[in-house]
Image (tube, rainbow, N blue to C red; front, side, top):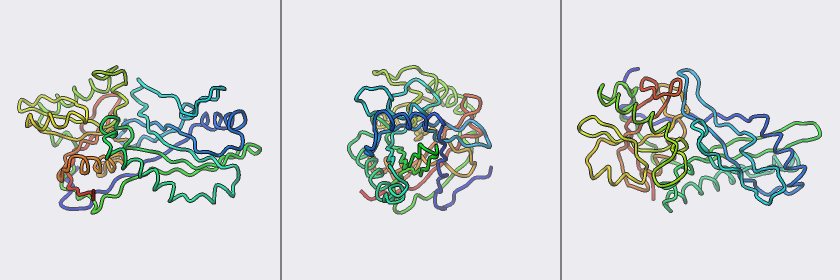
Length: 302
């Protein structure tokens, strides 16, 4: 692929979605046995993984586990899924209406704006640095017609506005951006990160941390770091990339998660020029021919 950029507006590939049949089975059970006509919003979790095929993007998927348990306990929170490298958790909210009229009457744009505001608040509070999964969110509106077993639904993925839009300076396959020594070290570091069982200091799986840093020293040695380690990496004068698990396969566009990531980078650290790594895989390992490295100019109003 030829070098991309030269001042064009950075275009993000929309996130694709799918709903497993098990999700509707559990929602039906919850409505019949637990929620009844209570149409209060329900916390859910969606799941996605880095792209793993050069011609097919990965979807954000809703599974039975995306919903709270249908047991008789009082919890309305979905279970926390950890340790599965192909299930990066995305928090979200479900509005399941009792009628089709209620489904159409919901003010979708207002709900979408409210979810986007949660992301913005998490950025300013610092929560998004400690738990980067909150940079992505999913909004689902549905009507479950249990008599006919018909499910009507509407998906949305809240995104923060980049105003002015990010400008793309450069975008190319990662294999063309790194030296051979750097590429080998970056691949090894990312593979180790993806296969780690625990993070340093806590029990949450590294595989579920979809936004991270890749630092490269003058000796071409690469290391993967948490976002909270940014200042230390900057002090060391290392080459630094903001990396994320990219579900998109397109060679000329980064995936949707980068959009809110750039908003965090600009608002939290006041960076104007950002080098980013769209991390993608092939057969479970880092693929630097499929992955992209880009550079963008960003400005986000505080």
